[in-house]
Length: 188
Image (cartoon, rainbow, N blue to C red; front, side, top):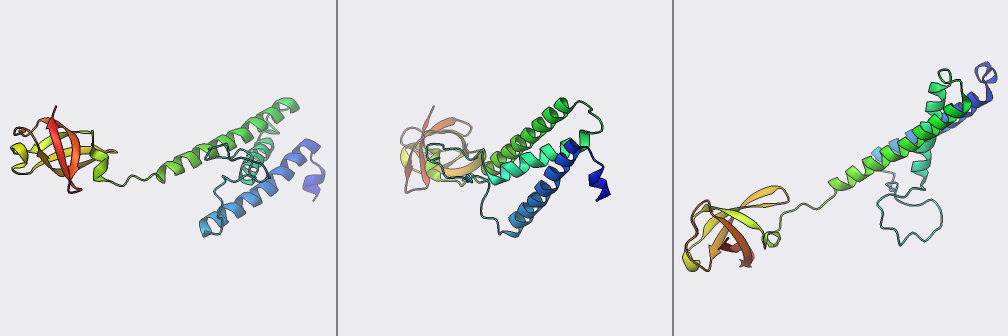
């Protein structure tokens, strides 16, 4: 304990902030990967009416507090011997703590993007443009094929037209569906 007793009070404060924050952070990380952590950091740790906020991220949560203290404490420990000015050191540590919270927010936002439903539904092709892949016979006398892009995925689907024959390579607009999976198209 002589190590801590000989330290300046500010450095002791940084150490006593960094060590518990690191322990809690490690526990949260282990619990998250073990599947015992049911919170994703979006719940508030206090009683408040947050129903009006439709945010995927709550600023005041235990996880954000730990992230802030982790950045604040360890940056204070790391820069104590480099930055002799106490005000500048505390200001830098505060900035690093805030940066940790912002980085966590960006990571959560990216992870939420992975949870989007990108499943393909034929109904999503209505009013979209497509390219004729296999010529479409006139007035529903047969079926052709079109290539249509939905959410970045190109699909080959059967198509019919109510008008004249549409040749390969033509650009068409999907106007409706027939039997739930055949596109009715018209030439643009």
